[in-house]
Length: 156
Image (cartoon, rainbow, N blue to C red; front, side, top):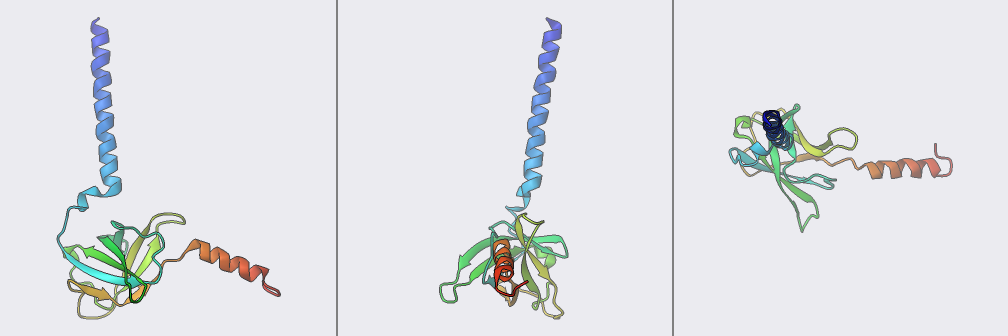
Protein backbone atom coordinates (compact mmCIF):
# COMPACT_ATOMS: atom_id res chain seq x y z
CA UNK A 1 0.00 0.00 0.00
CA UNK A 2 2.83 2.39 0.87
CA UNK A 3 4.62 1.60 -2.40
CA UNK A 4 1.47 2.46 -4.39
CA UNK A 5 1.22 5.82 -2.62
CA UNK A 6 4.87 6.60 -3.46
CA UNK A 7 4.32 5.73 -7.13
CA UNK A 8 1.27 8.02 -7.23
CA UNK A 9 3.21 10.93 -5.72
CA UNK A 10 6.15 10.46 -8.11
CA UNK A 11 3.79 10.18 -11.09
CA UNK A 12 1.93 13.35 -10.05
CA UNK A 13 5.21 15.25 -9.61
CA UNK A 14 6.36 14.04 -13.04
CA UNK A 15 3.12 15.24 -14.67
CA UNK A 16 3.37 18.67 -12.99
CA UNK A 17 7.00 18.95 -14.12
CA UNK A 18 5.95 18.03 -17.68
CA UNK A 19 3.21 20.66 -17.77
CA UNK A 20 5.60 23.29 -16.41
CA UNK A 21 8.19 22.32 -19.05
CA UNK A 22 5.62 22.66 -21.85
CA UNK A 23 4.68 26.11 -20.54
CA UNK A 24 8.34 27.21 -20.55
CA UNK A 25 8.87 25.87 -24.09
CA UNK A 26 5.69 27.53 -25.39
CA UNK A 27 6.48 30.94 -23.93
CA UNK A 28 10.10 30.93 -25.06
CA UNK A 29 9.32 29.65 -28.58
CA UNK A 30 6.64 32.27 -29.17
CA UNK A 31 8.51 35.05 -27.33
CA UNK A 32 5.23 35.81 -25.56
CA UNK A 33 6.96 37.87 -22.89
CA UNK A 34 7.72 40.69 -25.33
CA UNK A 35 4.14 41.14 -26.59
CA UNK A 36 3.05 43.33 -23.72
CA UNK A 37 6.11 45.57 -23.94
CA UNK A 38 4.99 48.87 -25.50
CA UNK A 39 8.18 50.85 -24.86
CA UNK A 40 9.90 52.23 -27.88
CA UNK A 41 8.73 53.88 -31.07
CA UNK A 42 6.70 52.99 -34.15
CA UNK A 43 7.94 53.16 -37.74
CA UNK A 44 6.28 52.14 -41.01
CA UNK A 45 7.46 50.81 -44.36
CA UNK A 46 5.63 50.14 -47.62
CA UNK A 47 6.09 46.96 -49.65
CA UNK A 48 4.66 45.80 -52.99
CA UNK A 49 4.55 42.19 -51.76
CA UNK A 50 4.84 41.04 -48.15
CA UNK A 51 4.48 37.32 -48.88
CA UNK A 52 3.48 35.53 -45.69
CA UNK A 53 4.55 38.24 -43.24
CA UNK A 54 2.24 38.35 -40.22
CA UNK A 55 1.70 40.68 -37.26
CA UNK A 56 4.03 39.91 -34.33
CA UNK A 57 6.78 38.82 -36.74
CA UNK A 58 10.27 39.75 -35.60
CA UNK A 59 12.10 42.87 -36.72
CA UNK A 60 15.84 42.27 -36.67
CA UNK A 61 19.03 44.18 -37.27
CA UNK A 62 22.31 42.28 -37.72
CA UNK A 63 20.47 39.16 -36.55
CA UNK A 64 19.39 40.75 -33.25
CA UNK A 65 15.67 41.11 -32.57
CA UNK A 66 14.94 44.82 -32.10
CA UNK A 67 11.16 44.84 -32.38
CA UNK A 68 7.94 43.35 -33.71
CA UNK A 69 5.50 43.92 -36.56
CA UNK A 70 2.40 45.45 -35.01
CA UNK A 71 0.06 45.88 -37.99
CA UNK A 72 -0.21 45.28 -41.72
CA UNK A 73 -2.61 47.37 -43.80
CA UNK A 74 -3.30 48.04 -47.46
CA UNK A 75 -2.83 51.62 -48.67
CA UNK A 76 -5.98 52.27 -50.76
CA UNK A 77 -4.24 54.86 -52.95
CA UNK A 78 -0.99 53.12 -53.86
CA UNK A 79 -2.21 49.53 -53.29
CA UNK A 80 0.92 48.69 -51.33
CA UNK A 81 1.16 46.95 -47.99
CA UNK A 82 2.01 49.32 -45.14
CA UNK A 83 3.77 47.50 -42.32
CA UNK A 84 3.90 49.11 -38.87
CA UNK A 85 6.74 48.07 -36.58
CA UNK A 86 7.32 48.71 -32.89
CA UNK A 87 11.06 49.18 -32.27
CA UNK A 88 12.40 48.71 -28.75
CA UNK A 89 13.46 51.99 -27.12
CA UNK A 90 16.98 50.65 -26.53
CA UNK A 91 17.54 50.92 -30.29
CA UNK A 92 16.78 54.61 -30.76
CA UNK A 93 19.78 55.32 -33.01
CA UNK A 94 18.73 53.39 -36.15
CA UNK A 95 19.77 55.60 -39.13
CA UNK A 96 16.84 57.08 -41.06
CA UNK A 97 18.23 55.89 -44.40
CA UNK A 98 18.17 52.23 -43.34
CA UNK A 99 16.71 49.54 -45.61
CA UNK A 100 13.89 47.19 -44.56
CA UNK A 101 13.71 43.78 -46.26
CA UNK A 102 11.30 40.92 -45.82
CA UNK A 103 13.38 37.81 -45.20
CA UNK A 104 12.60 34.14 -44.58
CA UNK A 105 14.07 32.02 -41.78
CA UNK A 106 15.29 29.00 -43.73
CA UNK A 107 13.83 27.76 -47.00
CA UNK A 108 10.22 27.46 -45.85
CA UNK A 109 10.39 29.18 -42.46
CA UNK A 110 8.49 32.13 -41.10
CA UNK A 111 9.04 35.58 -42.53
CA UNK A 112 10.43 38.54 -40.65
CA UNK A 113 11.75 42.03 -41.35
CA UNK A 114 15.48 42.61 -41.48
CA UNK A 115 16.76 46.16 -41.24
CA UNK A 116 20.14 47.02 -42.74
CA UNK A 117 21.68 50.15 -41.24
CA UNK A 118 22.25 53.13 -43.47
CA UNK A 119 24.94 55.76 -43.06
CA UNK A 120 22.90 58.79 -42.03
CA UNK A 121 23.72 60.68 -38.86
CA UNK A 122 20.01 61.25 -38.12
CA UNK A 123 17.92 58.50 -36.55
CA UNK A 124 14.43 57.14 -37.09
CA UNK A 125 11.86 58.81 -34.84
CA UNK A 126 8.38 57.79 -33.71
CA UNK A 127 6.05 57.82 -36.73
CA UNK A 128 8.88 57.81 -39.30
CA UNK A 129 8.67 55.91 -42.57
CA UNK A 130 11.48 53.71 -43.85
CA UNK A 131 11.91 54.83 -47.47
CA UNK A 132 14.06 52.00 -48.82
CA UNK A 133 12.42 48.57 -48.86
CA UNK A 134 12.91 45.21 -50.51
CA UNK A 135 9.89 42.98 -51.11
CA UNK A 136 9.54 39.38 -50.10
CA UNK A 137 10.88 36.73 -52.45
CA UNK A 138 7.96 34.50 -53.32
CA UNK A 139 9.08 30.95 -54.02
CA UNK A 140 6.18 30.26 -56.38
CA UNK A 141 7.16 33.22 -58.59
CA UNK A 142 10.76 32.07 -58.76
CA UNK A 143 9.71 28.57 -59.77
CA UNK A 144 7.30 29.98 -62.37
CA UNK A 145 10.07 32.17 -63.86
CA UNK A 146 12.46 29.23 -63.97
CA UNK A 147 10.01 26.98 -65.80
CA UNK A 148 8.83 29.70 -68.20
CA UNK A 149 12.43 30.37 -69.24
CA UNK A 150 13.21 26.65 -69.49
CA UNK A 151 10.18 25.93 -71.69
CA UNK A 152 10.56 29.02 -73.94
CA UNK A 153 11.78 28.33 -77.48
CA UNK A 154 15.55 28.57 -77.45
CA UNK A 155 15.56 29.03 -73.64
CA UNK A 156 18.02 27.31 -71.40
